[in-house]
Length: 575
Image (cartoon, rainbow, N blue to C red; front, top):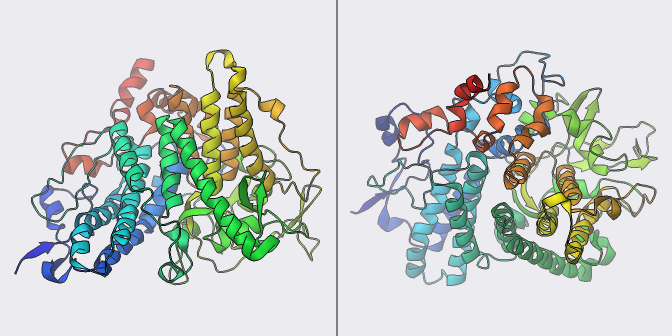
């Protein structure tokens, strides 16, 4: 009887093992009879669910934050004072390495096994689903295409995280289904992988449904890859590639879908749908209720989850909690978790205005300690009186939240993220680098970018109910460079602690060929010998992570990031 081996739980390169022999003995995790599997649609759905489950693992979600946030100017180690001085000992040196930019090649968070494991699920679906559709008469082509679109989106997302973290990565689109496959390959250049991801996503972007049935998703529609989610990921990739026209097109398509969804909700519920069509263009959840109680947008987006504004998020239910938030951000026993906000993000009035609701929802300021509240609480309910906290029914400032036993989803793409991608692309279209001048014919691009930023900002300061709150003034941002600063500041405020900031900094300064400016942005949080960090960041390779030493050891074709092999020589030369 013909058999095949499904290596669903196998990563192609990322196992921390000491020899090729050990690596190969782990491959056949499971043997099944071919004739009894891959025969109907439910088999495809089962493995596809496995891909989503793998993406929701603690290893994956932790790396989404570690790679996209910890190295930035948002994050400090939880037991360290400002400036990096340790106030207590801790065994979690790997986290500290990321935050203090002393990352070593044996750091746990530089492994990427979890993403290749997820990729293998997706590749397996793509390998077999077409044949299953030929066998199962009830498996329609539209359903096959929806499954293929999801599998490609999951695979692309995994590679997208690894590309932004490591730059060049081994790129495999074939599942590990037999022993003849060469598992050891070298890294593929960033642009080559990015072009391949864009090609794949562009091919299937309209195969994904706009909505899934409530029976399939249990009303958690945005925890599967929808058409809007794929367009959002494409917009992100085009932004990095510098193809601003296509980025804007993708963003506008997402707005079109959200506008249609808003029209349906408004027709059904009227004003009670709690969404405002800002500037008659951008549907956003109201930041506050009519009685001037703030917290509605936070509660729906980060508390309840799967909100109107969500495009794709990892789902955690009552049967399992988010494995990242309670361990790293906050827990019931402590307001300061493994990591906390650095003062440039957490100190009042440095990044946020006094009426910016995001400050009160994201930050817990205790002296010079700035704990992270985003995702931790399931409900926010507070008022701002003259820019100060006031809890309804209480005279105690700061009593701004109600804690429930929540299992917060982890959001990967949401609508305001896409809007701010569009604002960035518009700004880059208008930008003229010489003397920051502007061709008058391009000024409409800047004005449109400002309109988008202003819509996101005004929701956050609840401008409709707090007209005294200071808004944004276009005249202060009427040059491309100033508008670019505004866009990145707003992205930082809006997406704080969501695993975006480090990637934003890398994208911005690589685009300008000024990798050293990343050091200027984040250097305030470092301690000790900063000279080596400064030298590392003058080399663009230094903005990316080292490959884990075990992965380099077992795969001779994988070459270490030169920023981590030459740093000692660079320091000697600098001296």
